[in-house]
Image (cartoon, rainbow, N blue to C red; front, top):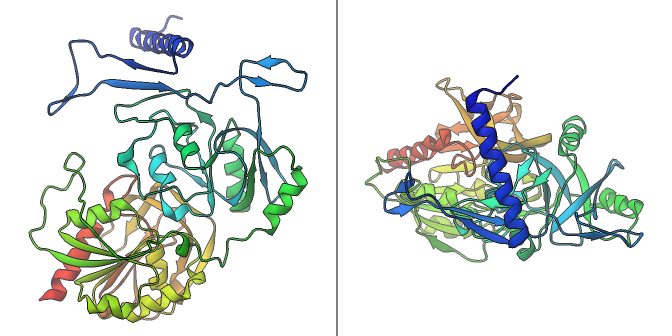
Length: 446
């Protein structure tokens, strides 16, 4: 049966695009596609042209044991999990051997923000979205100054990139930053295994001299629970943050006329958390994770932010002590790791989840209003609400598993969220949390 006209037209465009891409691969490693003279899409005075670049390493030729050369890349990497399973794959980015905890992320977009989120320190991130790399990489989407994760695991690596902001391919980006990546591996099967068995320690390796059993022993000996990962991602010294969300991307038009001085503890803070605070009218001083509470209080801030960060909150008792010395004295806002540290500082307990929450599509209910937000999350630990003292209110729950996703303690002038309200990447439903923090500081000023 013939395809409907719309379907046939779409198929024709896809075939035409595929032919153009193949032709470009034969002639050059990069190309640009010019838009027609009519129907140009414009943003203010800028014309959006299509920029495309072929990923150079995806289809490298390979030589096999019989000496024959193949026009395609063969499997040259392994992921060995602590349960003994071995996954053959193709490498891109850096080479070598790396150990980390394997977690899966369900976000459809935003792989660059995920790569630069310090909360992924010590972990391999497996993307459940099968097609990664098609938009390339650009300098504007960085959430920190470097990549902290151990490696990237994906199903398909795009053979070309096409985005008006693209500056380099994903492979080029990872190679420069010495981050390992593998593709052409069954990410769906690995995800099912992680959901059934929980997060697993794994070893990524391109070293053919090491046996599977040797890599398995490395995975079994490596531990992430009880390890202080915050000290490896925090800043070295205090600094002032000034940048707001760029006007091109700003969706909140009613900017505050008041200014609030906020001290932000850097446990692995993301740039867009700072940008959102600045856009809400905050003057921000960022301090290292081990900065004394007395020094912060001497600055007489209107509020203190305890940021997101990697790893086990029970492994950083110095941070818990700092939170204890600050709460009750000034308004406080905790995000992710900051939320967990607040839970412990109040006398509560935290626990390691089976496989954690990682992705930009987690439904969260605000129990105070019944409002449901789709949130961006990245954590392997959670606060046990039953362990919290009387007076602490659980304000939000994750609707996937009913885990604690937010706290409020009016007596101590604090609010906290388990997820990332700046949502980079992710939907902006929860941006109002920054406004709630502003109102908390405003009422404390009166």
